Length: 385
Ligand code: ATP
Image (cartoon, rainbow, N blue to C red; front, side, top):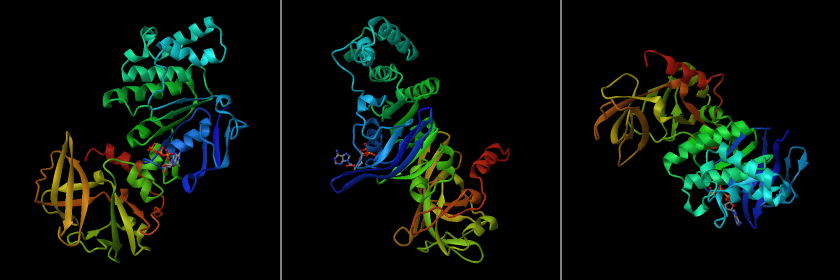
């Protein structure tokens, strides 16, 4: 069994703390994604496991072995980089077979395993080509081949799709997913692309500012974000955050008193937040419903910009006085909603799906036993929607 464990790992560069308090277990065969904005410490975390960066404190184990001080070569971890890092003067065959050559595997076995690996990646016809003559996607497959040929215990990938165009990215994404499942190799994968992370990972490790913010399945980090950072980082367009106060009649109002916002929450939703006079309301753009004529208990705003997206559109809505107190909301609505720039629009909220966050600490407020996954599922299945 090859699980990976980080125990209180920290890396400092002089006064800069690259990562701190990293406690993470990746189970045997699991596909874990390190996700977060640029500079949050993803690559440092990965490099500490590969042995390319030495942690200042903490321990790392692979399987039963403490590898914290073990030379990278002896960790049985293979890494794929964003820039592929192939040997330009070698053919595809030589590149893929190189780790076996270094390990002293004889040429017959090497030839067999290179062939088998190339077939797995569907590139056997490229084996005798020079690296320079390959497209980006083909080079990436060669890099994957070189990493998997020696069946490492751990597979490490640092933004391996970043240099590919959008279409190729999608096809390589599914190839990597299938390959990881087939080989069952414990994998850590770095990306700043939340869509890529959601589609690939069994487990997401969301990082910010050198710290892990949340570890969970894609569903958990999306539907039950532990704090405002995770809620805002996962999901596109981003969740709307509105600092509000709530009164005894369950009505919420922005703390900056932007005009037009009075909105009465359903009583069971209001009950979640009643003890907090002020909190930050989080609403994903698709959990608003946009109406072009007045409706009861709705937020009234004005259409600022519309952005068509095929079946849907993104509407930027201004609530209040643009030159005074106001808030701006991002709403995702079907393209059939006739939103016109400069005209009024009314928004209702799918109340059970909102989140509340502590305005000061950003932690998500308790919301009882609400299961958003179920709520979203039942919405999707409802024939009236
Ligand atoms: P990106 O997505 O941009 O690659 P990242 O999340 O992978 O970013 P890291 O590369 O791990 O982030 O960097 C984390 C922090 O550590 C950053 O503040 C970075 O400037 C700092 N850092 C990383 N490597 C070094 C180094 N060799 N010397 C000094 N500071 C470093």
